[in-house]
Amino acid sequence: MLDVSDEVRAEIGDEETERLLTGESSPGTYDCTSCRTPGDSGQEPTSTVLFVGDETAVLAFAHAACIPSQVVPVSEAQLQGAVASISGGAPLAGQPGPAPVPAGGMPPGSTGLSGQPAGGSAAPGSVGPGIGAPAATPGLHAAPRQAVLGITCGLIIVEEQLRPALVVEPTGPVARVGSTGGGDDFLPLLIEQGFVPQLDLEAPPSPLPGWSVLLAMGKLHAVLQPGAGGGPAAAWWQAHQPLQVSDGWRAAVQRGNEVYVYAGPAGSIGRQPREDLMRDALARACSRGQLVAASMPLSGT
Image (cartoon, rainbow, N blue to C red):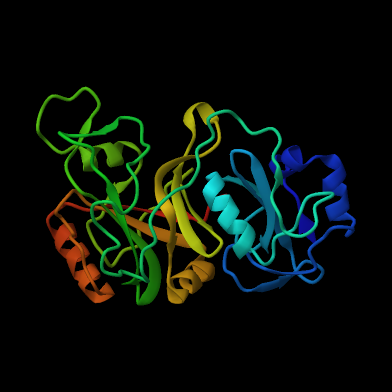
């Protein structure tokens, strides 16, 4: 019941793929690299997830219901940490235990995932300078200085149900590349990319095709956008280090397999220490016409 995607097969080779599919090197029981709960590749559909660094790679496993089989680019430093933390990881052929092995076929200049750890849902300090990374979005640059996209994970009540949400707010104005004015183009640029103005917080955001949220090893890694020219997905936002999410947030994602992503310009939402205060701030931004939103699946789904 093990799935090996074409991109994972291309990295690990046909021989190792066959060893996995025939059971010779299948994991048996494992901890899901997405939700961190136990799984059994002999009893339930299981995805192979290959974390690829600059020089090494680690093969891990996940419930197919959590994430599909895929290749996840990460920084080499994170990969070394994953070796110690992925109890469900498995070596490629010839390696004793969950140790890194040489990675083949990595495209030059692959982007690693990076971020600083944040607390649980809507924790203080999860939004603000130094948290998160500059958006890797074509057409955006900071005005007059580099802005940073802060992200808060929280649960929000929509249609009388708790929904997992990401709240995005830059630390300063964002302008178009080449712009000489002093305005803030953050919301217009997002609308051009498919985000929709959120006029009613009680209504769920519209889906944004091609965008997704990367949750791996039980932590938030990135928000992904479609790659240029139909290429692989690229990071729109990525953490300096994977961000810890609460058990409740992760459970809510698993129930619906979608995340509500809300975004407002600098100063429109602010740092909120509790989820009820975060929702109140979102409602105020919504009433002022300063909020856009989209719903996104987990990466690759």
